Length: 116
Image (cartoon, rainbow, N blue to C red; front, side, top):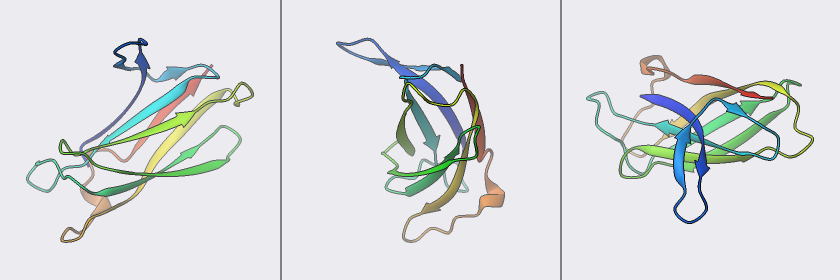
């Protein structure tokens, strides 16, 4: 795995992804995880599973599939009563026929974001 970023889509007609790690209740947090092979090439079609742990310790599990750029995109909607504080994203699994996932080879496998 190469990187994890969080952000928002900004704009209504042609929304643009904007990286940020700070969110407010009611936002939709966009999480992008880039998967590459041992040579650094994007891996298309991989199933990526993440967990998101909120400040209260509650855990949500999400799964997405990588596109031709190796990016799996997840949407996580914050409701009006979302707990404020630090949330932690962990990549827990990556799978694709013909590949073996080695979590020790990850450049990064966890990321925090803040809801305030």
